[in-house]
Length: 201
Image (cartoon, rainbow, N blue to C red):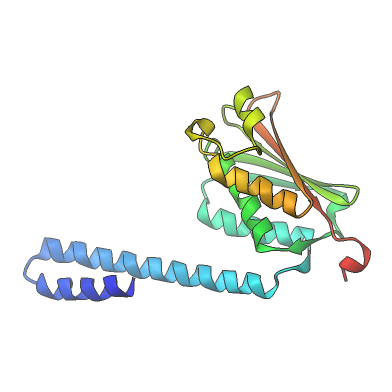
């Protein structure tokens, strides 16, 4: 980006007598600056996440941060989050891989639906996240393939991201299950281990 900025500055100077071209170059320069600023914010957020990696975080706080970050990328999507009363007082291990896994699921749902429902409750020592979209649903073949191998191009965009999400959740002792909702769309159910007792100070 720094190299592009230098080249664009030189081109801006060289095209001073061509207003149309000069304006286009100035626009490109502004876009490069915005891209640079966005990347700097991503790096800062990642560093902040690493600083708290593997520490306990209250579940509502973790989910709130996750959705705030995701909504900033896709503000046009309507997300309805419902937290069960039994979620209060629980905690998760704050890991970047878990956040990425859940964001992958949100991205997949957004690709087929601009309205998402998220219900969160506690089941014993695990957190259950149910994500419903209002898209066309999933074929039987796709449901049988999910989690066993990266999906081919017929997976409607699920692909490698969902396969890696499945692997991430298995690694931390969680699980994922996809099904079609009886009233339309698909349902993704994610189980994540909660921190218990001395694990959550």
